[in-house]
Length: 141
Image (cartoon, rainbow, N blue to C red; front, side, top):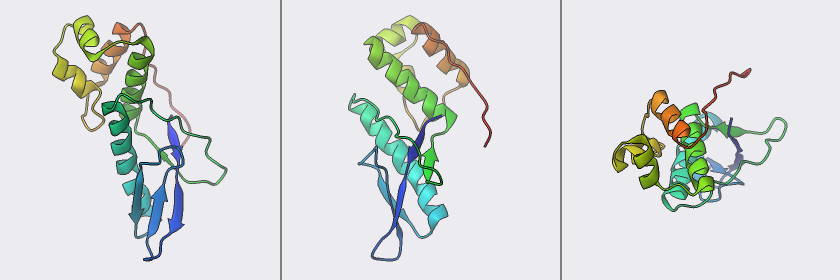
């Protein structure tokens, strides 16, 4: 599971400033810790989408400190990031993946769109086309 450490700091206007040490572009705020962490997930996903659109490597999360705050990415978001990373590592273009899956390029764009609700079987097919298998695990909360 991808868990990105988050720093919460009281700002000058009594809000909490939210930053990510591993993703400097991701900055937001909240009136309280709950709101700050909800907004943190949105800004983190937006920032990671930017990395993908710019064809840049996704920053790996550093270890979360004991009792530290973090944002855990949803499973589908992580699967999409892993698909992107797998494609980058294998130097497989979106066009080549579309060819292997016998589908159109917009379908591949949706598979890599963090805001689009792709189906699990579509993700599995994409990984298989890259010679990989998508695995799911359950952890204690």
